[in-house]
Amino acid sequence: MEDFIVAAVKVVVAFALLFTVVLLTVWAERRVVAFMQNRLGPTRAGPFGVLQTLADGMKLLFKESMTPRNAEVFLYLAAPVMALLPALLIFLVIPIGAPITIGDTTYTLQVTDLNVGVLYILALSSMAVYAITLAGWASGSKYPLLGSVRASAQMISYEAAMGLALVPVIMFAGTTSIAGIVETQGANYFGFLPAWNIVLLPSFIVFMIAAFAETNRAPFDLVEAEQEIVGGFHTEYSGFRFALFFLAEYINLFTMSALAVTFFLGGWNGPTFGPTWLVWILPVIWFFLKTFAIIFLFIWVRGTLPRMRYDQLMAFGWKRLIPVSLAWIILAMIAMGIRRYGLPWA
Amino acid sequence: MSMIGDLFGPWKGFTVTFRQMFKPKLTTRYPKHKRVKPQRFHGRHVLNRYPDGMEKCIGCELCAGVCPASCIYVRGSDNPVDDPVSPGERFGFVYEINMLRCIFCGMCVEACPTEAITMTHLFEMSVTDREEGIFTKESLLVDPDGTPNHPLPDTPLIDINELKLGDGWLRATSPSGRAAFEGVEAWSPSARMGGLAPAEPSQESHELGAVSSEPESEEDST
Image 1: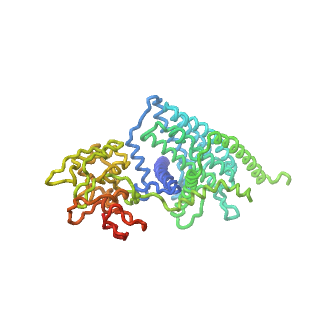
Image 2: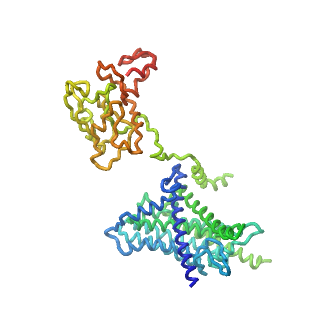
Image 3: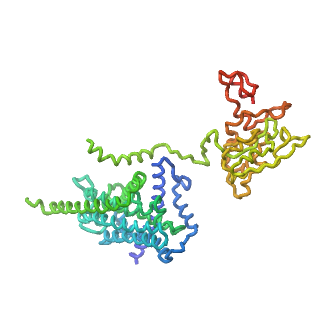
């Protein structure tokens, strides 16, 4: 019974946290991009315009939700939910802070720790493709279809690269549990250098590039390239169904940043000091600081780079990222072998 | 060296966008702060009066004729003999501009032989009803003291002082109203602000007379 209550509280907190953070992320994106373009961005709703996303969401809630005449109604209605669900579910396995011990019970700041966490994440991020593909196809309109065809090809290609980028991380950690991967990064090199997986720099770079493509963001935002195919897969969606896609997109952005932090930047690891409550809170602060740094990187790239051409996108994914990842896996394997068994001639 | 330069070249764009974040922003936070409009800004129209309070419009309908959007409706009428509205035979009895149709080209201003119609810097003309978009003579005509009427005078968005900055290029030719007028000249957006351009040193006098060689005295001669 107690387990059930703990799990329920965790789910509710995770849900609330995710939505709060997403509101902030959308606001941050609009403000930062505006600042990079010498504008101010939203400033009216709330202090510095923080509540702008909430206001937009409320507005969309009251807008008419249109259904095109040629739409496959069931799939058309199901697609936004299918987009949101995997985005929400991925967050469940990400630890946002160090385990807290109250009395003799230890609570992990993670809804659940799966021993196949990495596979779970990869599986769910593949599920997101279904939502986009079905949304585009079920709309019964040409631009959404083009967008969804692009989306499926792009996301499948870059998923391969992303999975390969995670292989060295799993090899280093020796586990596919997310909590385990974070814990192995808590050690130190030479007593002061944090043993974050950032030492697997090529993996980190490949993972980040794949993450840009997976979240359909600039410079890989061909899925919703406004200048070519209007809004891509969500062209025909309006009202709160559009809001769900929008929400899913930004939840994906946040979870991808959180995953990058978890896999490569040590997760919640960071210096802790002071009284007990500070020791509990500091890891959470480190985690969110790192995550928002990565989100800033996403926004920065969006504000800087132009969109790639589609053939460049495909060539880059298949002819550059995947060979680089494979070569790096072999190198990492050799390095680990040497570390474990010594040099072959020694 | 150049190899290293080539390596970092593509990344220079990131420093550009990063630097922009700390530069002053171009956004004007509109209802609070308003940008100064250019002098020749084509805002809404006003119908002017002579300094003595007489209406300048003589009901000739040239503005209506020249209007490319056909948004002006004028009907002239004979001046009452004992209480003339404008100097001359006729005056604008009905004067309406459909602001929903107006393209703010300013051709009515050019066509007007008496400078009765000029444009101001006012641009906040949103209405909640299509009928309110038709500005009648009441709202177009300035008050006898020269203050323009605006249909939405209480809105915080309206800065009535902006009306005093009429457009600067068509004011010079207005003669006084009645030759016999001796009272204090009232302010008029088109008569007072512009004045004549100062005389060039080579010029002996302006075409319109009543000009001394001193540029400072231009202000008095209207």
